[in-house]
Structures are given as C-alpha cells and as structure tokens.
Amino acid sequence: MKWVKLNIWAASVLFQAVWLALVLYPEDVQWITFVMWMVIITVIFLRSKKQFYFCFSLSVLGVLLDSVNYGFGLYRFTGHSNFIPFWLVLLWLSFSVYASQIIEHLFSLPRIGLLLLGGVGGVLSYNAACQLESVVFPLSTELTSVILFIEWVGVTYAMVTIYAKK
Image (cartoon, rainbow, N blue to C red):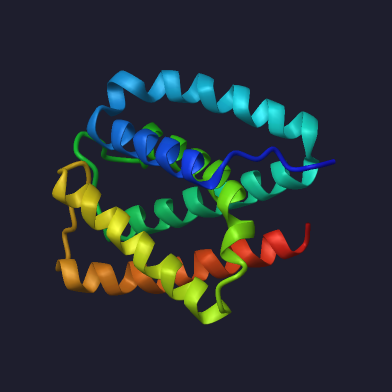
C-alpha cells in the first residue's frame, strides 16, 4: 500500500497552522484538531499500515519524552499541574502525520545534516512556544535549549530509523 501523501509545501503550511492554533488557542481548537486528526489517521490506517505504525510510534515517543521532561521540570505549562496538556498530545499526533509527509524528502540530506536540522527545528519550536507564553522554562533558556537539541537529535534519529523499516 502507498503512503498517503500531500505536497511538501501544503503539508508544511498545514502543520504550521495547526501548531500555531494549538499553541495560541489550545482550548478553542483542540477538539477540532482531535476530530481532524482522527479522520486523517483513519485514512492513513486504511491505506498504509506502515505509515500508521510510523505515526503511532513517533507520537508515543514524543508524548513520553515530553512527559519525562515535564516530570523533571524542564518546562511547565500554564494551568497544568500533573500531566502534559492535551493540546501537546495533539501537537505530537499532528507532527507525526507531518513527519510522515516530509521524511522522504529529507532523506536526500546527509545524515548529519538531517540530525542537526531536527535538533535545531525542535529547539526553535519549543523556544517559539515559550515566547508565545504557552510553555515556561524554569531553567535557563540556554540550558533548556541544549537539552532539547540533544533530545531532538535523538527524536530525528528515531524517525529515520522507524521510517527505514518501512
């Protein structure tokens, strides 16, 4: 079965719009995002079990990573005390679908370039969320960024590994 694919630019714009909406207006858009994600992942499941596995694996990895980071106090979310917020779970679900759309294009990069791109992209995303006041870094921004960079290099490596098994 073929993977469900969007144009890379359409996928990028759509993901950035979902990211921005979830970060800025989580209470207003999280249920719409959830329904949209359920429809998309159902289509993916029906068309490609391997793409579904990729999305599921990446989502679980991301939610676990953010839960550990949250538990150790790497960052905090406004109005949430015990668990990561639902909108962040939805963000990981959305990112996993987005990653499944673009990863093939990224394989043309040298492996080290791909890992660095993932590390920098992850750091920029969390720092942007911090600037938009949806996440707070209790530690210094520099230390948090270094930790996130290392983690996102690992997430990117995991994505490449999971995708290579397709």
